[in-house]
Image 1 (cartoon, rainbow, N blue to C red):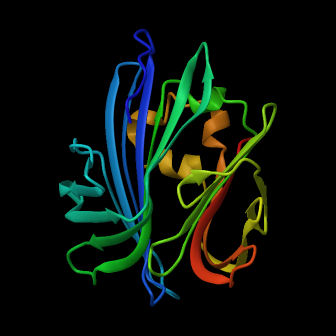
Image 2: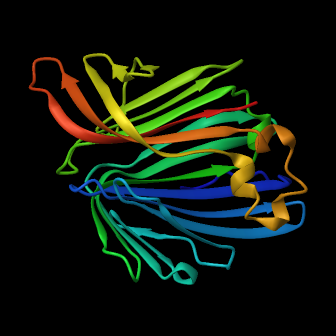
Length: 268
């Protein structure tokens, strides 16, 4: 992603997100983020492992760490302070989109791996390997200034990590929906609680297990430099993330089973 310059922008935020779901239902989610704002130069990494029927295991660090390395369809993120390594081999073309732009800044979004073979390795735990996903977002406008009341995001991937559907749905004063089928943006997009649809393609989400349900204040509480400077509106944001079985339906083709990770974030 090549961020367009805003020389005087006081806010610069980059976030990488990775996930993986194994055939046995084990899942892993990782983040690498950096924030430059109000004199802060903050780095944050987090990895959480999810085993069916067990309490999630998470680790976080504020230690400086180089960003993930992406080249030739592969991504490696070595979060040394967490003793975690994430390896990603993309099997689809990347997605790149400017989601928002105004005089205050912009939001750039790139899905480096809409469908990928992914592994999370963390000492003391069995490696999680399976179909997964990787994206990064770059912002020069604080999220609380975006015209969003509710955000829906998700990704569906088949077990072989060869097919994907990715969606974003912004609701608020400037609503907009994006659905990408196998890396290509669909001309029409509708996102509901049941899943996304785009022309002749739709994904029907099954009953899922909750990965987490939390307020952003819960995350900020672990990052001391942020606690006193973030507005209450962002701290009150509530996010729920699920892992669900999902079926992709293409007109004239057999139904395709797969797995989705999806979320709803509500801005207060």
